[in-house]
Image 1 (cartoon, rainbow, N blue to C red):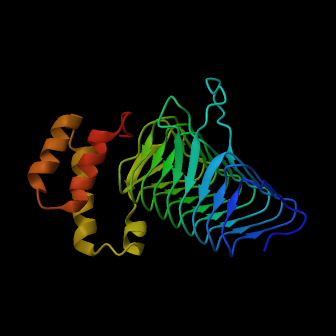
Image 2: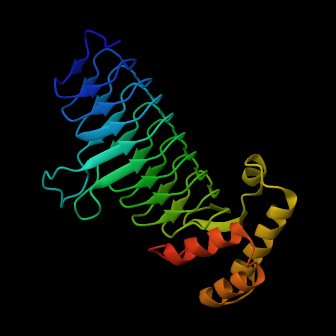
Image 3: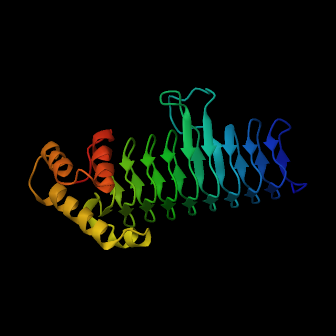
Length: 256
């Protein structure tokens, strides 16, 4: 299933059932699991592990050296899970030793054409990065988040679960779970109610998240006081626990 015109290093580990198209280059240290299809003109380098049933389209660059002036050739890694679609001209870079030395992409994600995942980023599961969406280094993107086309995320920010960033959003602070942001700079515009409905949230859950949003954004409370109120008013809600824990864990302030 490897085209004769592809260049595959003898030290690469390619499972049976992997397809590799013409003129693709697979470097030493790359591991690709069964069911993955690598299109033509793809370059995969470094200590890169790719799981099952992914599809990588033409001209993608996967596992390249980090774009970081501190990088001095150290051995770092990229891990990609299962059933991801990585479209044309996507770039994904390995980690750096200044962090954990690892860039990680989970399962069932869609990275549209020209999307960029910088060094040390972590993308969870079911994430969509639309065309030319870009992550700076050390960014975390949580489950089911959607980044609109040409949106950019500053280094060390976190993008919460079920959040949505509109097209061309400039995100310099973290985006809490469930929140819809847009603009330059990005500002909160409400909750991602349509996305929540598609994910199977019922009316009661969505109404509760809307109440939490009003406390966080419209009550006039300081952040710590707003978090305490959320914990006291919704002690049994897993949705609100997720929101509060995200706010505690974020390395940067959040869009408010």
